Length: 214
Image (cartoon, rainbow, N blue to C red):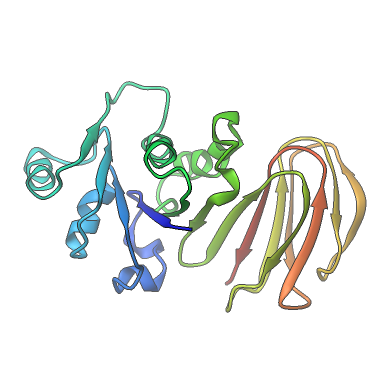
């Protein structure tokens, strides 16, 4: 399955080392100012998406000179640039997995938006194919059912986050749960892998699962 990488405009200090060093294989799509950062890395994205309100006139001219496929939206809109970029991938690369970089750092409201956007029903068909990645975290999303994830090298901690009522079972983590009824949005943080994988099951909503390190 093909993988499409999105680079959002978050600060470079939050990027994984592999991205800073230009070692993440494409293809890429630039999201707003993330487009300019890709060009600075020597990466020409397949497309550039966003309202580009974070770039100045000269920077926009640079983007226009190097990228043939630019999809510019009105800054006054109900969707974020990242959401529009995900929809672009859903339309043009419907079978692709989506890795999103630059989603964290800076404004807390934008971070919350990026973490919550995949709860929207419109993304239901793609939610399990999206991963958010930064220097310390890997964030994935799951539909109801039983799942097993592999431990990422260097990632010590596990977090399970629900946003609606569900029954949650954690089978083989350091801290287990058995058919636990979760009534309010809860972050079951600072759990850990006991093996090279972790197994969990839940019955409702979208569960956010975070692997992280100090």
